[in-house]
Length: 300
Figure (cartoon, rainbow, N blue to C red):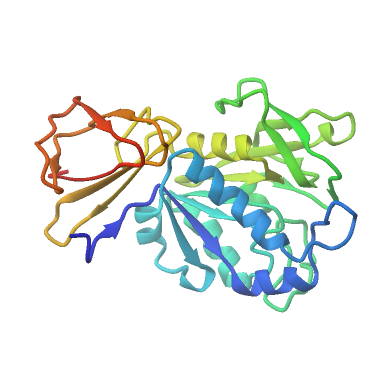
């Protein structure tokens, strides 16, 4: 029933195995006792991935070596997050800038573009080769011994709950043309922004200078993709909706209630129940039993 389905993705995230290997040996993050955290790469990467998941967004993982065809990438992946892409050759970094210039929304995470493909620190302001596109640069950074509260900057379009925090790491962004979205609640680190954004060509570059806590990461994902491609909105916290396109061109919708309690959702389009139930008109309420999974099809 689902063989050959191409999954949808609201957000694409760049994964780098070489950066992961290097950070296992030379990690930027520390453990609670102050020692090196060999899982640093995964902690940075996972913070963005989990934030997208908890915001109800679908994610596609792309390996750094798969970055090619700028116009197609900007069309298929309107939001591209590059967290902890520490090892990156000049061509890859330039591709990221051109992706944004071509209309994509590039999100630069901690440590991205700090070193070249040999692991050598770039002899230029960080993030290397991206400072003009990003409108920020930094040469100071710090580990964090505890979480820092953050708040939305004045006139920021980002809705940020009161319990949002920054964790593990701070990059001391100096603003040079970007708009500030999020600021730290701290007498020292508060001099630098936590999140910035800037128009670049037909697209945008957003910089996240910390490892975002779960609330901050989810808020970022919602701001990056205000309308999920699945079309399912206002889902209960225990329900996920995953969509894709089948070989015959129909849209498939897998709706999963992960809770031991019943839940209700609203159909965004007219649906056909592929497991034998009745059809569901647009706007109708769909009842999900405990830990229920429903599979639907639609024409769009």
